[in-house]
Image (cartoon, rainbow, N blue to C red; front, side, top):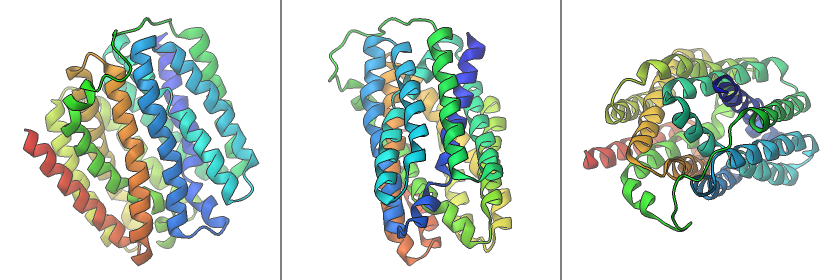
Length: 352
């Protein structure tokens, strides 16, 4: 059963990466300006945000497995439906459906894994490995319709594994759906993460285009993304033993340094080594925040669902911000991310 869990985590992170990297380029190919590219990305994350809040809470109230199966099944349909994209409108609609589908299962899957083996670093690392291999595969295949088919197939495999290999889980808490105590309890941690990640998503919304402007082709864009992912795969298991608060602090400081350096790079070769620093920064911040929420909350799926939704809310705010600032050039987007991360560091230090 543990092997099936890791297989689901691996494939569920590999599949969307095949598509995610190229969404800004697809939007641009249909004539979308930077602001509209940001809006496409923001629409996707708005739907992940809504689904994460709703189904994270339901996973505590109704059990984990049902929502893992539901999310993976709908993701199979949604990502296969990318074959129907033929203009900017269909891209908006299908990415919105994909966002909602992919937002259903992560909180339930993470808490299911935590409660079975209590090793967040290793489980998260497997997800990063999936993302890394997905990035390389996307760069090698580099044909949109083939990537859409592969993404749908990989999700279908996870759907079957979830149905037949995961155990039924009972409800964890008996509360009303609208109980807001988890949000009130964790709001500083949530705000810290939101500010940093909004800045980061401002970068990621235009990052493939930025890399292309520095001379990277599709293959090297995939390689650059994969360095981040494989770095996380190496770092996450090693960081599991450290205190959550130390991890968060380290992640924020390293993020500030990384974003400033990105603004100074003149070609895509210079980006390569600092993708490793980015991987270390994200590994510290992500694992530290996840550990903190798991350790301090009984309603783990609700807390993690809120955390995942914050990542998606960042994916709404950041691309919109990046789209606007991007009209003045790509480098100001990097510097604005550094400023937002510095603000998040101050919020976090005020708690501790």
